[in-house]
Length: 120
Image (cartoon, rainbow, N blue to C red; front, top):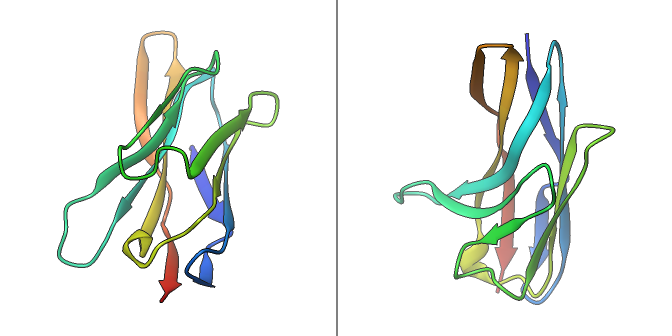
């Protein structure tokens, strides 16, 4: 069984920084794309950033230039460095990974979510 475990959320003042981490564990053949999504109260879940196994990145427009996603393929981890945080970044952040679990099957997995709160 595959699990994604997140860490690093918390409360920070506007302009501050936080770093989120997520580790994938369990029976996996290969970890494909990994990423972060977020959901604020009353809003739909939205893309924050994704990174492929080769290191190609993609960012949501609202975080470009402020957030940086990275990964360690050897450890099956993905990180999100968040700088210049704004109150509108407040949300529950979810880790996501597309994982090949057998030769013929791959599935999307989600972490339990970690709260990020940015005060003004």
